[in-house]
Image (cartoon, rainbow, N blue to C red; front, side, top):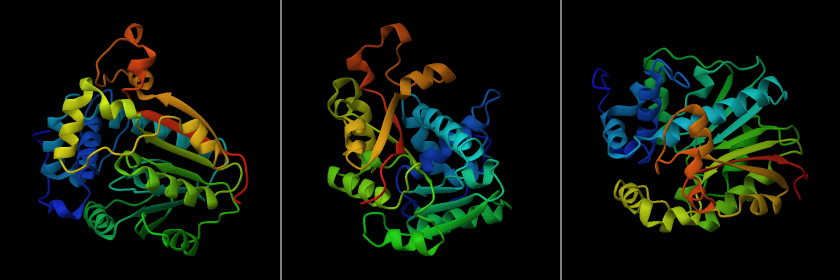
Length: 288
């Protein structure tokens, strides 16, 4: 990506992983066989994001895979299932509201820290980006108890089905914070709503094979601390019916190698737990 001119942005404006995520999406967008096209990712990434991307052994391929996977999920929910309100907690530098087509009456709610959203708005406005849906940008603290009120005040209707995507967040939270966030989301969702997130198994945090990576992400200021070993049971307790897909399976399907690099034939149950989990769930029970 040496031909890309990155703006100079103070690192403290954005969480440690957000710049890298944007850089990964920018790099993927330059490929002739790209899995998605994010025209604004390079401008958002800065040189800091590119530096971080190059440090990772697979240069962020899991981010590419999860982006494409959840793109497909959200498009199917919108165009085939008729869901018209989409919520992105910890939206970061995501540009789905701008880069993807949406049904005309779709409402998009992006939640994140104030400085993250301010930076994103500045860059997107500078580059003439326009959302393709009704977009609401909400500056909130997801670890606090007040953010659901801000979402409701912005027009989110808890009585209608919604689609929630919590991407690239949960493994940075403690178990208590994860459960609290899931409880809050569940209290805001009607039956028929959808939830998607990526998570890690505790085997990833303790594997000698992944030790170099886990130490690297920790040294970059974003340690993995939150594991979910049984997402299906966890979500069942909040009224969801969940399905788990291992990122390696989608990586093989999309032809994007992710670390640890193995073939389909070499996969074992133990090895599977060393890859990110893509969790999707449908709300069955109404909020209590």
